[in-house]
Structure formats: C-alpha cells, structure tokens
Image (cartoon, rainbow over all chains, first blue to last red; front, side, top):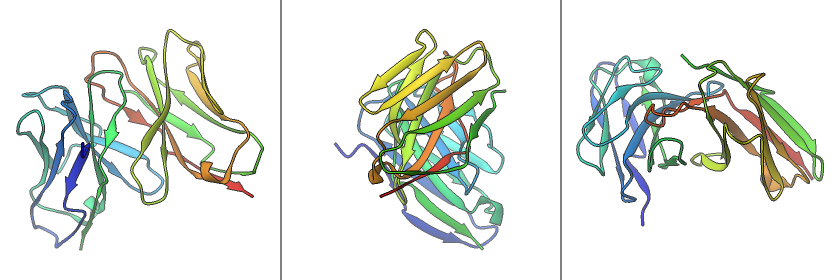
Amino acid sequence: NAGVTQTPKFQVLKTGQSMTLQCAQDMNHNSMYWYRQDPGMGLRLIYYSASEGTTDKGEVPNGYNVSRLNKREFSLRLESAAPSQTSVYFCASSPGDRYEQYFGPGTRLTVT
Amino acid sequence: GENVEQHPSTLSVQEGDSAVIKCTYSDSASNYFPWYKQELGKRPQLIIDIRSNVGEKKDQRIAVTLNKTAKHFSLHITETQPEDSAVYFCAASRYNQGGKLIFGQGTELSVKP
C-alpha cells in the first residue's frame, strides 16, 4: 500500500498562474482533507471531503477550490496564485469522523 | 468556531526528563483530541488520541489527560529520548463534522543528550 500520495513534491509558480495539486489514497478511506502549513501557524484546514460527493470549507478556503474526483482522489486548485499562498500543502485521509488522519508527504509551493 | 491554543511553543529538556505540552480549546462540543508528531521535513503522524468519555490514556512513555470542565488537554512524555525531538501538534474536533480537525500552533521539543 502506498498510503497517501501527493504530486508534485515541489512547485514554483509566478503570481497569477494556476495549478492543481493532486492527492490519492489507496486505503479505501471515506474522508479526505487539504491543509497548509506555515511556520508558527501549525496546520490549517483549507477544504475537506467527509465522503465521496461532498466537499466543505475549512478555516482558510479563500483562493482555493477542490474536487473529490472519486473515492480515491481529492485535488486542490489554485486559480490565480498569490505570494501569500507560498506554503507546504498536506493532503490527508481518514476512515471517518474521530479516526486517525493519514498524511501524504506534502507539496512545497513557492509563489514569486 | 473552534480555537485551539498550544503552549509552550518551544521546550528543551534533558534526556530522561519528562516533557509536558498543554492545549486549551474553545468549543465545549469538541469530543476528539489527537496528538501528532512531525519530524523535520516529514509528514505529521498520530501518536495518541483521546475521546471525551475518557480522562486519561497511556501508551508506553506517552500519556494524554483531558479536563472537559476546564477545556484543556495535555501530552506527557516520560523518560524522554533524543528521538522524541520533533514538533508536536494537538488538535480538536466534534462528532459529525466530517473529521474536521483544528490544530494548535505546535510545540518544538528538543531533547538534549
């Protein structure tokens, strides 16, 4: 089992460019999550999908969109990247409410 | 919405000493409290969790205590070892919110040999 995988590992964008971060899990988990991690601010939830076919906003959704493509895949899109979106992005999955979340290896994104 | 405060932000201990990290939360309906460990350059990984019907939980050298009245919970690490050096995050969530976790800001623990 690969667990949770994310692509790409690193990305540099110019302000205004768009991109999609991909996440996939092979654990048959119902729920998936996108977080961003900035120094001194912990992990902040961007969007989550409690089950296939549903998505909800987290703490910091502005500037992002998500798609739960199927049970395995949950993508995060930046339509017009801004320097404030420079961060490390983690995808996670979980069997459901109040269970362990398994994190992917992260994507380090720099917006210049 | 839920807010989780974590203290201290940095903690340095000698090998063999105990370490305690504290978190407070604002939403009295929160009922699941996990702790994650993140080593440098790695992904966060769950080390222990507690649900609101339990006051304390232990797993070898790690324990978590929960005080629902005061809305705070703590991580206790005994007999610390250099490999315990990492950033530790507490988090809180409510039932029936899709597992939505709100994290504390993190504590960087350094264990000196």
